[in-house]
Picture 1 (cartoon, rainbow, N blue to C red):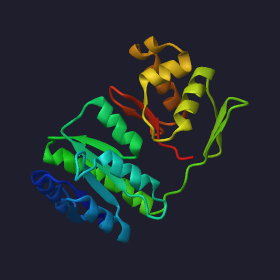
Picture 2 (cartoon, rainbow, N blue to C red; picture 1 turned 60 degrees about the vertical axis):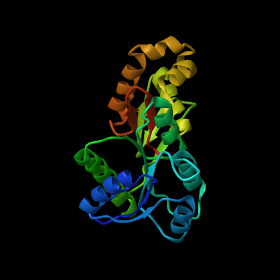
Picture 3 (tube, helix red, strand yellow; picture 1 turned 90 degrees about the horizontal axis):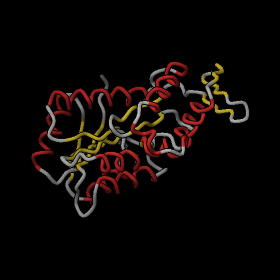
Picture 4 (spheres, one colour; picture 1 turned 60 degrees about the horizontal axis):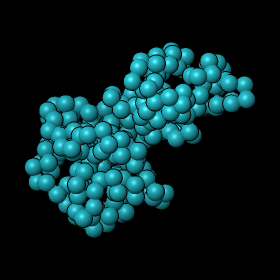
Length: 224
């Protein structure tokens, strides 16, 4: 696996040691910072593939930092991981919606943590290797989807569900939000209805297009 250039931004020495050990085992080059000024200075003068952030930081938080990274169009976008012992759904969804690529709850088994980072590094390798872009088009007039030059047809409810997810790629749509928007009935979110329609969409378009966030909702990983 190719080396990746990384930043660890944490104010917790134990966490810094934990992240450092994992990156060392994965043959990653990394820098450690504990202040916002050091992070901004380092980030703006170098290109990084991976950034690991604690949720609580120096006079700021990871969600604010991730938003700043996402809005900076002059710098290559890294893969961003937010880590925290606070693991409620609101924090998880807020982190992912701000632009983070993954949220990891602490404490975590070191081997599991390394495997999660290793999976993210494979994504980095594909990105750095200029992976071929996916052609994706939603034809709302004819209720059809064109994916890599192949035409797919979905029933109206599933088409509308896919169209909702695609309206904001990488946003995690909660089941309640999907139920209110597509069915105008929040009670649908407590049933298996949404899961069944998602499964049908995956059968048509492939399992890797829609990502499940267990207990929370779904997002689509096709870029506009």
